[in-house]
Image (cartoon, rainbow, N blue to C red; front, side):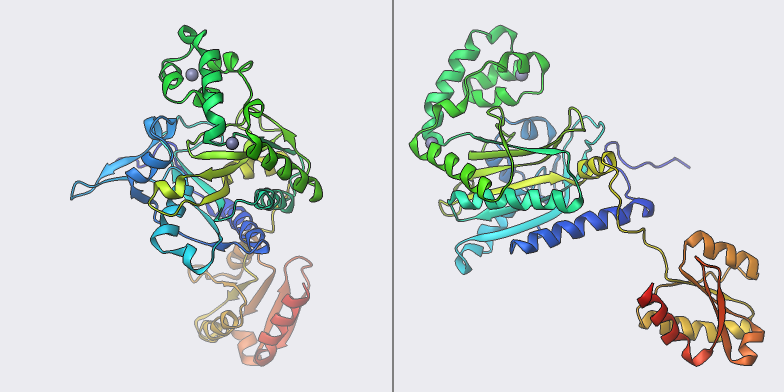
Length: 423
Ligand SMILES: [Zn+2]
Ligand SMILES: [Zn+2]
């Protein structure tokens, strides 16, 4: 038989890890609810044009990293490489803007990119994110950032920094693109092949290039902040003032351009101080034109996304604990076929009363069942043998203290519920 393995760049979330995922997902949902965002789930594949038109066909994502496939009718689909375009597609298709002028949506789920797998970077990875569509107020920019900050704090992370930038609008970009082209033209021969193409088509993208030699040249490139028009400059000032009101500390980093074509004005990243090269926990920004590009109204939106993998790495580095691993409340030790009959009834009743119970019918001896109870980490053991059955009693053992007592069979459910409630 061949040995099957998960595809390269993918992995299984095993039971020993899955409780951590449930914990961070639940905290994200709770945080989003605090700001009145509501969950949306979109398909994991879409018409590939949705990403080509929005993420941008000169971006690495579309050029190299997208999983594209043809279905049986020859239609071209792509596994979603990010969440925003799908959410916006769903927003337009379902007319979400009709009911409420601003839509506040959050999502979580797997994304796919054909990238070289490395630490904290996978081909199927899990993101969480939010989108706020319909408002241009810089207060919303600050609130979106506040939500991200709230989430990281709630997880217990401390060692991170918020960096903000404004990448202006189309009006600002005219002069800025010219300045960049002028600057990078004198290095044309030293830029990587991709950046040489970008130089004419989309010079801003050079600032985002992962090639070391390009990054070196980009260090002294002109800053967008020097090219902001009045509106964009005022917006950026207002954002900073709101962040100060919220007592959220930040640093201006004019090198944040974000990887995608549709961003305008506010761009931000939450950067972990411990993680090294792959250190962006959350990245986001404002986008204009995206909604129109996908066939919607001319509306502006702002959002962010982050990867759960990197979040878990950051938590591990800061030695942050999780809520306890999933363990059963109770392990049922049942000896003999007569006792088992009664035992099955009791277990049914316990589960109907929200008590989680484990029982292994393949273990017959008391010692092997007790061993299994220990390994399962159960809080209590319920022991029912032929002797107890005759007396209509049952033994309840507290696994932490080792103390055990006998109780009448008919009061055991309420006894266990009381004990669990006070433990
Ligand atoms: Zn502008
Ligand atoms: Zn380059």
